[in-house]
Image (cartoon, rainbow, N blue to C red):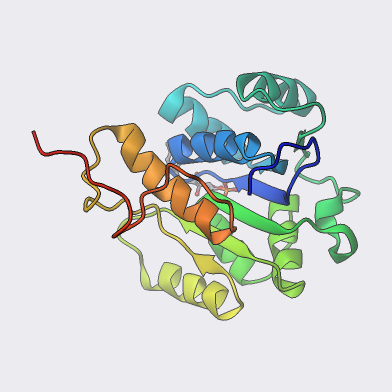
Amino acid sequence: MITQSNQCTQKIALALTGASGMPYARRLLGGLIQHNIQVYLLYSEAAETVAKQECDWVLDDDFAATKQRLSAEFQAKSGQLQVFERHDWFSCLASGSAFPDAMIVCPASMGTVAAIANGLSDNLIERAADVCLKEKKPLIIVPRETPFSLIHLRNLTALAEAGATILPPAPAFYHRPQTIDDMLDFVVHRILQHLQINEPKAYRWGLTRLPEKD
Ligand SMILES: Cc1cc2nc3c(=O)[nH]c(=O)nc-3n(C[C@H](O)[C@H](O)[C@H](O)COP(=O)(O)O)c2cc1C
């Protein structure tokens, strides 16, 4: 839903954890901001390492500076992006009474998947996901590991049983992607679709014309 008004259409928590896949996370954050979503951003310590490794993306423990940097990078409106510290139990993400409309964990490490599946709530990412499930709001988990062990699969199954959507970053090829960005967009657009965010550029089978073959 794109609106012309200044009012954000939805409030969404986005958690980045230390799995491979930061290019998805970066594009997703940009997409949410572009779609006028109020974003509450969280990232783990391991996410900082992976973001630097994979795309020279600087996320660090100076959360205020990171908020300013990312707001500038994605041209967020004033206050549209908030970045929370890892143990900010006073944030709106720590309680069901003020929880946003949905939460995405992208990429989701197997460590964080295990922690959420077992209700550990030891940091704000785990607690926010726990609250999201108990409040029965959409929780989208974008898990990344290959291959999955039985333990990973059991944890993901437990999350699916608890109501989460398990949306692996598995781009398709039937839309004939030409670039890496096309492949990133496929996954990002599927996430947006699950949150009823209408991205006009999203590929829709049977509706979108395919690019001509070379
Ligand atoms: C470059 C890099 C890539 C990684 N990729 C993955 C991955 O794809 N999946 C995964 O579960 N863990 C991966 N890890 C390991 C996690 O970062 C590690 O288990 C960490 O403790 C997860 O912590 P977090 O869940 O708090 O982010 C990776 C680590 C690094 C440094």
